[in-house]
Image (cartoon, rainbow, N blue to C red; front, side):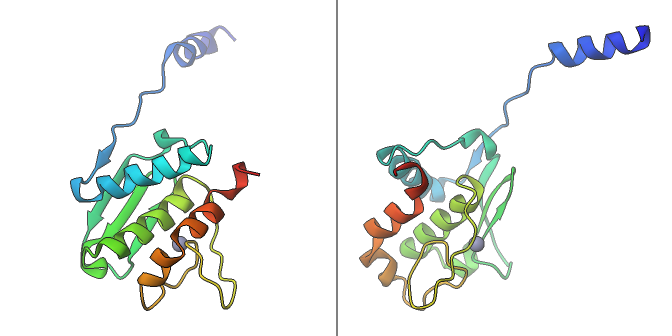
Length: 140
Ligand SMILES: [Zn+2]
């Protein structure tokens, strides 16, 4: 038992080191908008879960959430289109920060649907409704 004591002391004294957060400049407005929309709807978001929101290129996905780590957004697939970036970032943060699964309800548009709509404009047209749905769990 004596041998375990130093280990307990060590664990008790060590503080969790805050993650360094990397946010690509081009993605900053969308990330900040997500936090703002969450706040407007009284949805608490644990941003410390994320280590990065970064651009990548050459991958097959539009975006990707790596749970507990961060969000990757594909520069080449999104072609840096503002509408696409917005939807992709909100979708991936929906996974990474809101723990949301996909919602593939037929005939409906959702931020959390797996397949991206052929025209991004449909999301913007429905944006406020889509956001209410995305942040719904804590607003009811
Ligand atoms: Zn997804």
